[in-house]
Amino acid sequence: MGQERRRFFRIDDTLGVAYRKLTEEELEAYDGDQLCPVDAMNLIASYDTKIASLLSQLQPRDPLVAEILESLNGKINAISNQLDLDNELVQRVAHKLQEVNISACGMSLFIDEALKPGDSISLDLLLKPSNLHIICYATIVAIAPAEDPEYYFTRMDFVNMNPHDQEVLIQHIVKRQGLLLREQREDDGTDASD
Image (cartoon, rainbow, N blue to C red; front, side, top):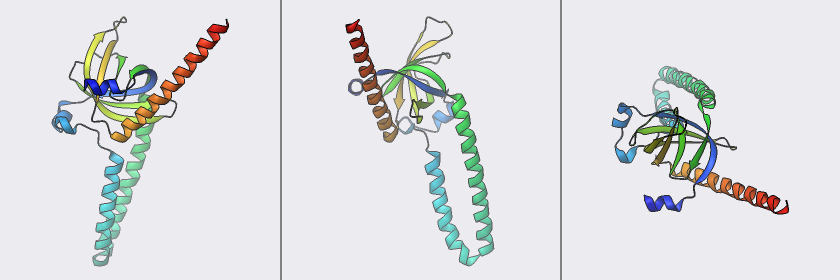
């Protein structure tokens, strides 16, 4: 893991961060190698495909039952879509804009909760300015008191991040690093002419 960490660039950045500590029940539901968030949209899509297939088989035998089940599935989809919209609004409010030091394998930041090394958390990162979400789990590696007694400097490793999300994060970091280097060169050029 140490060598993997050195392969990734670390940058200072400002992100929207929402997190929560995983409960014992959530941790018991997974073993260590399978700790990764469920992609609800893919899960719903797979159920819709299965329902559509079964309804097409049921339609010739019992059209009334097939119509009732199709209506129920439509109702469930409407409720799911509304919950998804509500969740999106809550996420926008729940994200706290924070300064972080981040790489493709972990990050550090100041939080107002004293977590413990080994604690597992669910993370939702909102990359700026693209507003892309990275949803993953992380394990707390270290925590130390900050100068402000209400905050703790917290380091964490991402756990089983989806490869697509990791690629999005890497691309974000590379773009951000390029922008920071360009700004630094511009500042150095300005200082040289003064």
